[in-house]
Image (cartoon, rainbow, N blue to C red):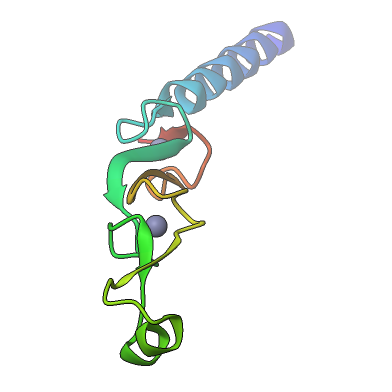
Length: 98
Ligand SMILES: [Zn+2]
Ligand SMILES: [Zn+2]
């Protein structure tokens, strides 16, 4: 009789563990990669231009009529970059509990 109860308890525990495992699924937003990459995001500091715009005063100081200033260091002059951020859906775990 005692053995039967014990076996029943073990079976229940195993079922419980199985359910917990099945609840975790791969995050659908990042597909388990833990981060999301947004390609060709316009660079914020240079507004997607790839260079910093000069102010009127800076243009005067440089003696130029071009607004084209220094190359943007954030995007290395490309104006766009691949923005990466931690997936908020799974919080960077790559999996979520259903
Ligand atoms: Zn930039
Ligand atoms: Zn995710």
